[in-house]
Image 1 (tube, protein in one colour):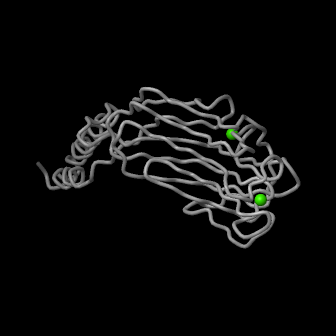
Image 2 (cartoon, helix red, strand yellow):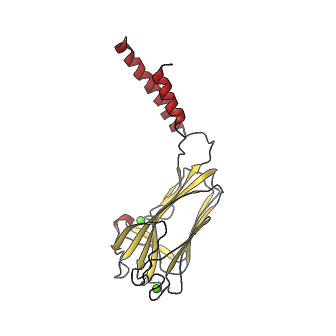
Image 3 (tube, protein in one colour):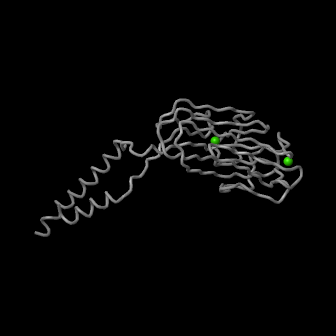
Length: 234
Ligand SMILES: [Ca+2]
Ligand SMILES: [Ca+2]
């Protein structure tokens, strides 16, 4: 084997196996809450609306036509049962804090959005109307000042992206508005859009056929390059 081939082989061997993330469940709520399912194996998926419903989201381009909006104090839940073997979960979603949120120290306050999923528990608050505390945890603000159109207050939209160790067969997340200052309705509400849950298959899983094809093609190309070069150096 030539030195070049050895170097190429070493590069392949030294490259850590990249876990290929597979979609479990994703939705933009444009048609329903189960738009794209699999290929990662699952047994059953569930949603509890808890007062949420499909409502217009045209006031913010990134949400398309519809989102899931909840203006009640009910908990909205997403669950997946019977997941195949995996080592990590990748959970992504956008949250809209809609209308006159009063932070934890405004009036009427506190307004708190409770977000809980396997082993993680968060309390978020924003101050669209009053108060001084703005805390969206690890989220990234992707819009402030836009108006989804439920009252004249502008809204804040925050993107969340959680990649975390997870091996059990069950996933569950609940989002619920709470706090003594919660006024609901057209006063304060929240929405979710661009939800996706993906898994990294457990280690030791045989790579996808496409991955093998790519590796084999890679070796083939190294060989072909050497064959073409040989006459030039002869
Ligand atoms: Ca949408
Ligand atoms: Ca309030």
